[in-house]
Image 1: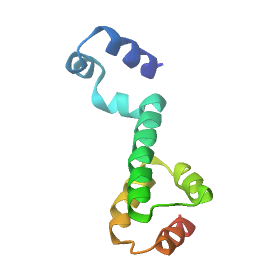
Image 2: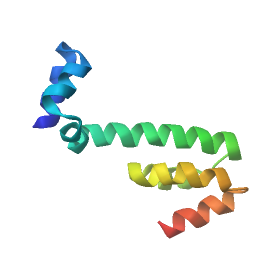
Image 3: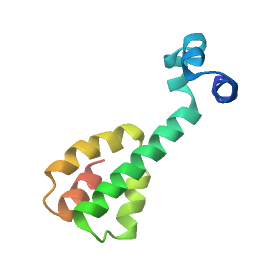
Image 4: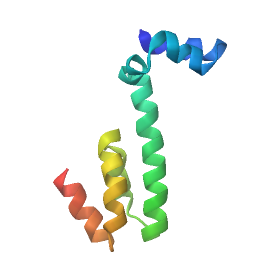
Length: 95
């Protein structure tokens, strides 16, 4: 319910005012918030993967898409050390 209130409040009020009344912790617990964070993290990671490895198998992309926001953040850091696509495959197998 809090997620709905946050979204609706955000349509009418300044974001700082919404944060002041609802609190950032409450917003972060919202499934809507978490879904948005996960989708944005996936978009960034998928762009990084395409730039680093060019053509990526669709099954790998789907595995990455299924990761949580926290796992995507971890992958974003680890990705910097992956010299080849096999490193991504190995990392995904460990998740």
